[in-house]
Amino acid sequence: MKVDYSAVEEVDITRTEERNSSGDAMSLITPALLIFLVYTAMRTMVMQMISPFMPIFMVDEKDFIVDQMDLIYSSLSISGLISAPPRGRLLFEVWL
Image 1 (cartoon, rainbow, N blue to C red):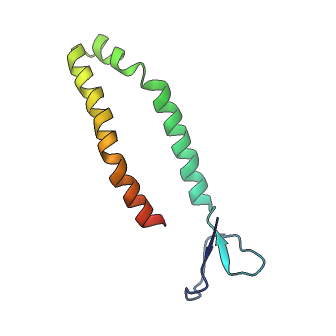
Image 2: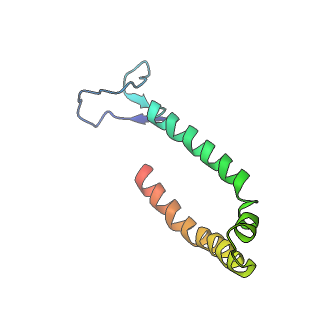
C-alpha cells in the first residue's frame, strides 16, 4: 500500500523507508510495523493456547467458583462485542 506525500513539506526523514521510482510515495511497511505485527501474532497465538485452560486452572488451583468463572468469561465476550464497533471506528478515523 502506497501513500502519497506530495502535499507534505519535505523534512529530514531519519528512519529507513522505501520509495518508489517517482519518489512521490513511501512504503508503509516499516521496521516498527513489522515488529508490531510479529508481537501481535505471537500474543494472539499464546492467548489462543492459554485461554481454553484458564478457567480450569482458576477453579482447580485458585479456588474460584464455577459460577464466578462463567461470569468472568461471559463478561469478556460481551465487552469484546460491545467494544468492537467503537474500536473499528476509531482505527478507521486514525489510520485512514
